[in-house]
Length: 133
Length: 133
DNA sequence: GCTTGACCTTCCAGTGACAGGAAGCCTTAT
DNA sequence: ATAAGGCTTCCTGTCACTGGAAGGTCAAGC
Image (tube, rainbow over all chains, first blue to last red; front, side, top):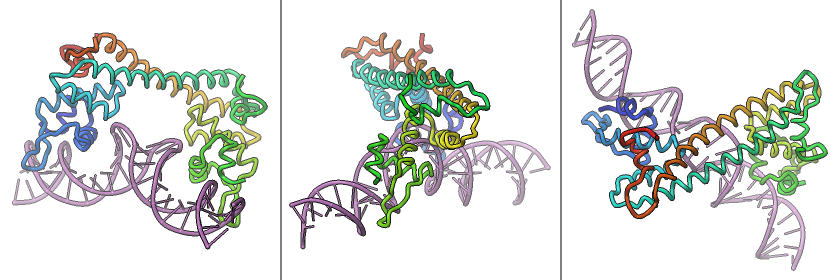
């Protein structure tokens, strides 16, 4: 099948699939007219990639996960290690965002938000007198 | 003062300050030798930018926040609106990350992580039989 | 046969907010 | 005089695509 059909089945835009080929994650065949030809196995691989990306794995992690998936003698410990490392990064990001959220929501609560110029948000950014209470 | 000194006081690397000048957030003077010369007001502005960036505001938001800060007749409502919009984006990001975290931590828990090849993480990515339980 | 429209191809540029590094000038100290 | 360090600009790379231009291909309808 052609790229658009493959994309529809795997839930990915054609552009993304071309990119995945460019970085070597999939290797579809080529028709005599130069069109990419996707087999079932290619579509399956694309679905795998789509789900891994949806879980936030980087392209490089996806590459490793795919190779582990195709390696019948893999150790599940290798997969788990990658997932755990990624989970740690997710936790870090969440923590950083929550810190921003806490600070900012406090400031927003303090700002009356009317036509007057007084604004604790700007005051905090300007570092007037002290760090956030 | 020169760029490094200004960076030290504002808590920003020189590279970042040059970038901020490039995008028009600061306009330091120039010495006869071509070196940037930072006034107290420039350092203050850089500190403002550093704190705004630490709260996750984009460069464009920073630009608006700075102009509001310098506009004595601003309405605090304008500042609050920007902050609230940003807060909403932060919430969205946190929610997306937590969804990943939930799914992935469940899978990681299910994976025994030893030398055997059976791996529920890969099975999920491969979409074997069903979506995540 | 011709046209039209929907595909497909490659290649290039842009995204956000910098960071790294090269090549070269300036300043200060020894 | 020279060496070290700071400064300058300019170019490239990051990450994972996305948009768009220019052009080839194909199937359907007239």
